[in-house]
Length: 169
Image (cartoon, rainbow, N blue to C red; front, side, top):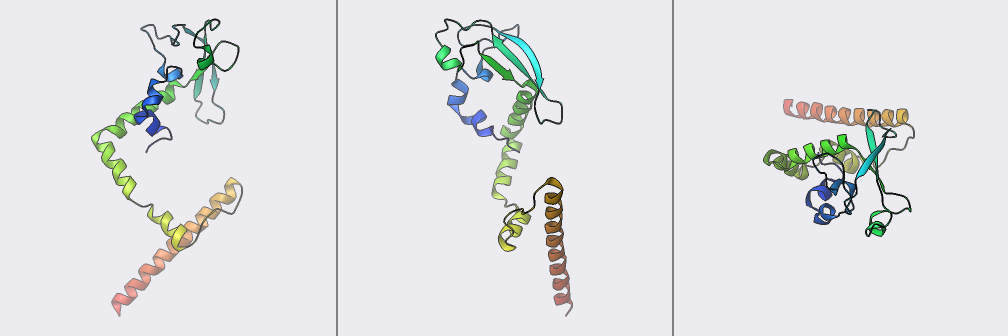
């Protein structure tokens, strides 16, 4: 399944040619990031991503010297040295997903998903006029979705029972 920035990361030429995006910084053989002015970024610290229950972390890097940089007004928004945060794990996952979705099998799966309607949700929204969840709080929301799903399954079951009775008579 495509992630939110899939189209931008695969088709947007401006996104890939933007020299000031951290993901587009050059990386020499030693693995350090280089800004458009050729200055190295030094690792500062690692921090946990807030709200992530899997312990994912992002790395914070800071440019060694931004004073007198001709690109400073385009590159940074504060008077201090530029800081960037990178999530290498997420970048690796995105690269893997892009590789899978752009090959022949992935293209066929994406095309197939695009033409299929989400049947159950379509019936629930349009035919049963169930537009939105009314409850608040995770437990109440789960209960409401379970009840609507049970109702939908009972409706299907009743329809099949009626069809069998009609065939028998």
